[in-house]
Length: 512
Image (cartoon, rainbow, N blue to C red):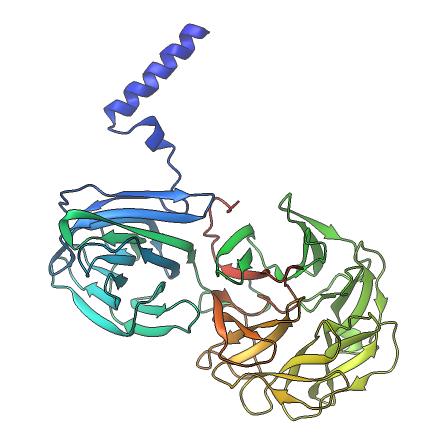
């Protein structure tokens, strides 16, 4: 047996030598990518590596440029067909040698140096641009962005149209686009670094790398669903970590006050997700098994409020159940009623209700009782949530023609706008320490004011509780409905949990 093992090891080493690869290289972790290599006749070989502890990719590359009729750089790639959305936060390392060293996303027809391609690129001097070669060996064309110094890079393909979205982290995207660029259905998609100097290696670091496949044009909302990524976001740094993915729709994670568990809905059921074990378990909610994404934990974490569809009662009905599970108690007698908030003293629930074809904010005793209408403005009022001191309720309203964040006193008085309508803003969530609000922002050109659909380009934005200053973008997401409908702050006010989506899961292996 010992001799057999020695011979097997010898054979493996010989095979590695004969193929020009080491055993170590064969085991190299490339994250979501299939391979990497130098493009063109570079003088100094580049490299690429994935760090599973920090969830970052680091590339080094040399080469004269990515320009004119041919390219020289280092490329980390995977093969893809159809439409996709590429996202990362990227930076070049050090001062560098040439101001036009490059870092970004690239899509190529082939790995040949003269291949048709398109890239969304950030240069060492801050120049941000969309560069492309229409045919093999043709000169490269360029569209320069209106911003400089971008570190958030997104490149989307839809058919033969390519859209570049770039931003300085914390700010909204600035967009450029190229249409009618046929690179072929199956292409090489990946990260790249070029030094703009054949004698120099430059390095780039990429974090929060996401490759998403968007919804197809024929998708029927609320019947067809994409896969879901359960992510955790550090609100200070913006770093994101995918902790679980599943090839179906899961929505709206709540975070328990002990910091150990998330709760979310999927297929009408409620699930608890053990953060230490990274494992979901179905929560017993008795006969209430048509739960939607409007579910809320009490401030002490002992009770869970549910919203569940009951056709005979007019739609969504509110229930409460112990967080450990059991037989839910019905609270609202009729629907639609969508729960969003629980008062700190556990005595009152606030919800969005449609009464007489008008959606407004209502309160109701958590033990059951008469409803109290808190808003009466024309337009949709939604997403009410108490502040930790119980004095205010934040909500979103389309009363001015744009969905904005509002606040009012707990009795419904002194209603005032907090955001200015640059986007359609939904679902304000207040941090446990009472200092911050996060909310979901839809692009005006993609959605109507009173709609919050699945599978759109959305932002998570954060603002001081006072509403002063400009909101800061803390996450750029492909998601929407179900991303963050309910309170999802960690108990220490440092992180939030949310859902992003893709037709194909693109995080492999799961970040740990």
